[in-house]
Every structure is written in structure tokens, then in C-alpha cells.
Length: 197
Image (cartoon, rainbow, N blue to C red; front, side, top):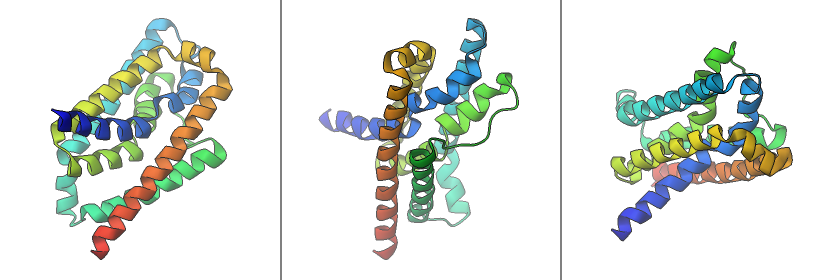
């Protein structure tokens, strides 16, 4: 039982850092501030469902795609780690991980909030890494619980920002960015050691 809780903690925390729901708030608020409560709820629901479907789909077929393309997990770790490191560095330096915006508020729930902001390269790479190290069931439960937590944070976005203040939201996002950079370097290190070993 202790091993299960330990595995859950070791899968939940990296996914929590990769999802970075609080860091997404500065993107979410401008897109939803002029909406009615029912429309905002719809956008948030669509974002979480999009993130869930994309993440679970990647867990289901990610390794199969790598096998068909003759890509080893170590190769993916290095490539994914480098991308994560670049995204984290860009976020830490410029304050923006992504430049694109959705063409309309109706689509904002799916793009850019659901993907790539919630389930993007960081989450997909982390999911692939975790499913290679821990039971898939535990990884999926951790992912779903992270998305439930994301939905809760998004639903209370205005209150959270009022409590933290814009500076607090930015600071929290920067700390998450540092953790994301550290995870990226760890992935590159593991991939390189596996290739060399």
C-alpha cells in the first residue's frame, strides 16, 4: 500500500508542475473576463475535456507511435526534455510560453487553453516518461486528478487572482517554470545516460 501511495505522489507532482494550472490563469482570465457565467463555465469545461482526451489518447497510442517510427524512449526523453527546457526558459524570460491566440472565445476552451496550455508538450512528455516508470493506472489516476484540480482552479480563477494578486500569480508561474526546467534537464540527463549506457 505504501508503494502505491509513493508511486501516486511521484506521478501526481510532476504532472501538477507540467499542467501548471495557476500559471495558465493569466491566459484564461483575458479570454473569459467578458463572458457570462454560463459561457465561462462552458469554456472551462471544454478546456478540461480537450486536455483529458488528448492526454489519455497519448497514453493509449504514444508508445505505439514511437515503436512504428523506431524512436526509443531515450530519444523521446532527450527531444522532449529539450523542448520543455526551451519552453520553460522562454516563459521565465519573456513571461509567455505561447504566442498564438484562439480566433474566437468559443474555440478558446479547446485551443489555446485545453491544448497547448493545459495539455501541451510538457504534459505529453511527462505522461510518456511516467508510463514508462510506473503502472499506467496510477499515471492515469494522477492525470485525471490533476485535471479535476485544474477545473477547480479555473472555476475559482477570479477569487484566486484576487487572493494572490497579479504579482502572486506571476511569481507562482515563475516557480512552476523553474520546476519545469529542472524536470526537463532531468529528462535530458536520463535520455543521454540511457543512450550512452
